[in-house]
Image 1: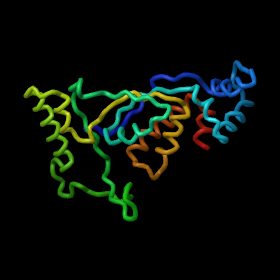
Image 2 (image 1 turned 180 degrees about the horizontal axis):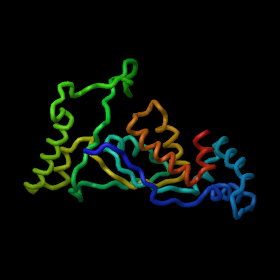
Image 3 (image 1 turned 90 degrees about the vertical axis):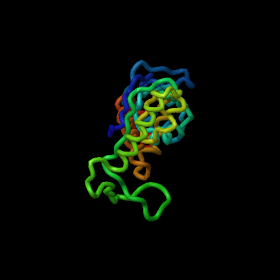
Image 4 (image 1 turned 180 degrees about the vertical axis):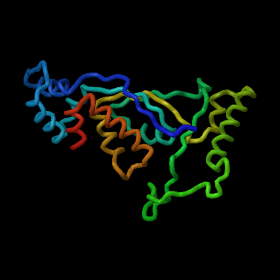
Length: 216
């Protein structure tokens, strides 16, 4: 079992200066250093949805999260590229996500969760139902491999709580769209964890541009 999602910034291209130079090229202008006078231009671009200058700066992340989180995030396609580990080719040790707490079902909507905490192991058994299912799936997967079953079929028994990992690359604007949606409090909390980490890392590299895109 594993609890935490992890996000690592692998690489980036450009800076806030990249954004303002891309915007100013229309007038044949170019600066060698970003100054405080450029902040207003960055804010103007973001406020008025002039997104193309933000497309000249990019980020690359390595992310490890459970499959159900990955399947929510991969829906974001525009300006982004995704390469994920495949159990057709690897049979590394399987790890499962274990929530720190189980949230209750919402009372007035069809999605999301409530603030109620559900105890799924009230009798304090040594292994709760969730852990038992995960371990059973893991054992079956490994047993199928021992029998000689192809990994691309054996993986079918593994649940959505299994950890996966991927490289996620894209433009500054594209990741801002991800965070503007997935950092909201009404999104699934496990997905928020990943988006919030992206949010912090992106701001470190592109402080002025990121703030303008996120505030907008």
